[in-house]
Amino acid sequence: MANFPTHIAIGTVVSGALATVTTAANLVAPENIVAVTLAGVLGSVLPDIDLKDSRPARAMFAGLAVFFSFAVLFGLERKYSIAEMLVLWLGTLVFVRYVAKELFARFSYHRGIWHSVLAMAFCAFVTALVYSRLLQRDEGVAWLAAGFMSVGYLTHLILDEIYSVDVMDTRIKASFGTALKLVDAKHWGHTAVMAAATVLAFLATPPTKSFMENITSHALWSELHQRLLPPGHRWFQGMAWVLESPPPRGKASAVPAAIAPIATGSIGSAPVGEGQATSGEDATKR
Image 1 (tube, rainbow, N blue to C red):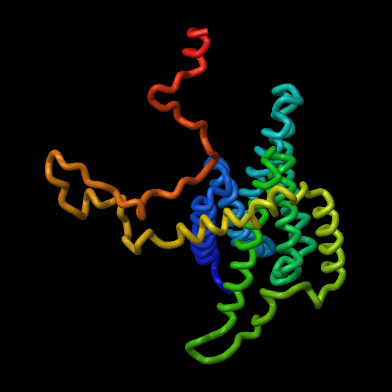
Image 2: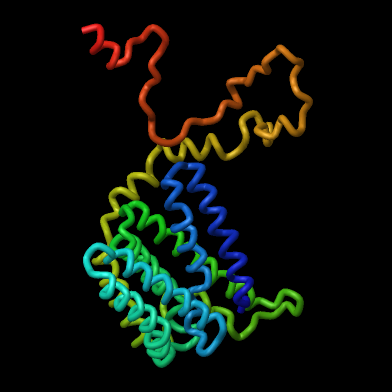
């Protein structure tokens, strides 16, 4: 299996690539891009949460404790007093960090149900639920975070399978096939519980309409196609001031229409042209 730093590194690269595409497509507001990217990074290490008494497991439960405690705090900030919010915040932190970790260690084992596509689906649905209900994000953002979580999770499973093949000795290790699987066929009880939890989590998730309309939009994919490569294959034109000599003084360098930046984002109000009266001027003339 790949070690913890490798999973973090590869997960960060994959999530960063997804974030780049998402930003280029103007699919999510800038203030949400970090939140959804973190979901992908978390997904890239989450399957190893069942490593008992290991540094990765302790680090993940500590991180999850901080995340859920602040998610509860921000979600309930206007419903309770300061004293009550402190109790809820500290209680959530202690419960996830110690109680949930101990319970999880008793009923799980490494390369079990958490190394499966079923667990990936469960974590994706929980992510959508947490982002929507606790973090009060738009339903489209919540499902985008779930997508990032799924890709990060799947990256972990695939990476573990790759490490199960010893290329130098041209042999397949005994762990091959235990990382990437649909369900845990050795422990059907765990599979049944995870399947039931996945169905319940899905039923509680927000609607998918906004998310599906956005990612299936023809305008979105057309935008991505246009922005995939630089116009005219002229790379880093924005850095021309560094790479090229400045134009002669008194002569403005015309920017070809082919390399004009592609407009993204919401359409703003039309500018008021010269000789065109504003609403205030109209009112004065009246």
